[in-house]
Every structure is written in C-alpha cells, then in structure tokens.
Image 1 (cartoon, rainbow, N blue to C red):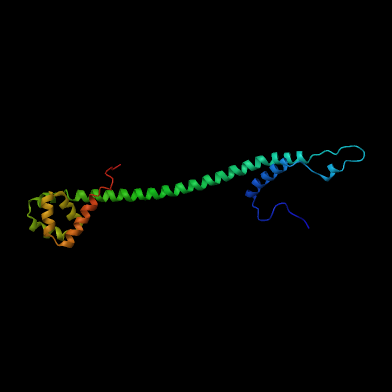
Image 2 (cartoon, rainbow, N blue to C red; image 1 turned 180 degrees about the vertical axis):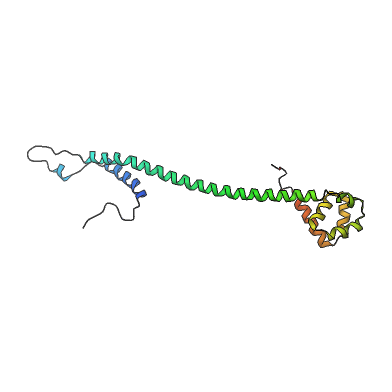
Length: 184
C-alpha cells in the first residue's frame, strides 16, 4: 500500500502554504533517525543531510510560493477591477438617463417661452382654464409655471380637479429641490 503525502482533493494553489508550514515544522523539530540512534561499528559517521535537505527544499519552493501568492493577488485585483468596470458602466448609463431627462426638462421650459405665456397673462382665469385643460399637460404646466403665482392659482382653481392635480404634480416634479441645479 502506497501512502500519498498529499490528498487528492488538495488543489495546487492550496499546496504551497501547506508545504511552507510543513517545512517550517520540520526545521523546528530536531532530526531523529534510526541511523543516528545506532552508530556505525567501524566508527565512521554517516552524513546527516536531513535538515539540510529540508532547508534546501524550503528555499527551493519559496520563490514558487511567492509567485503563487502574487498570482492570487493579481487575480483578486482583476476581479475587483471588473467589478469597478461594471459599476462604471451602470453609472454611465444613469448619467445618460439624467442628461436625457435634463434635456427634456429644458425643452419643456423652452416650449412655454414661445409667446403663449404673454397671451395667458392677459386672459382671465375662467377663460384660460378650459383652454389649458385641453392642452397637453406638460405644455399647460410650463405655461402655468411662467405665469404669476396668483394668476396660476386662480387658473388651477377653475380647472377640472383631476387635470389640475396632474398639472400640479408636473409642476412639483419640475421644481423638485432634490434635483441638482448644476448643469455640468
């Protein structure tokens, strides 16, 4: 029966630390051999190279162990780098979405500038309300936002409550304080 020093389930990467630990242990334990216990009868000494062999073995695998450790560190850094790269892609996507939203918001505000504001400034609230109700809610909200607060309030009070609520929610989202004002 042949006994293997290393079990079959040991992976090559796990082998190096175990070999280093075994080498360190063997260096600490004084060499005991059956040959040393029984001295030769003719007075000649056998060379004891067990400690030297262990030391040579440990020094020979030290570079390999260091290389394995560096390889493991490099693999870990590669994993971290790929994780960072994935997060950068997600952030770039979110940045593009934000820039798209900002462009739509600026277009929304620009649509109200086209002279409609001046027209609705001169109208009475009861006349302006039905006309703004018939418009797209985004455009109506842009116009109402450009009107003086008192006139906007009067127009909204004259509108259908559901339509006024929709326009009010658009106005509140356009003036959300949590949205950054920085356009860079």
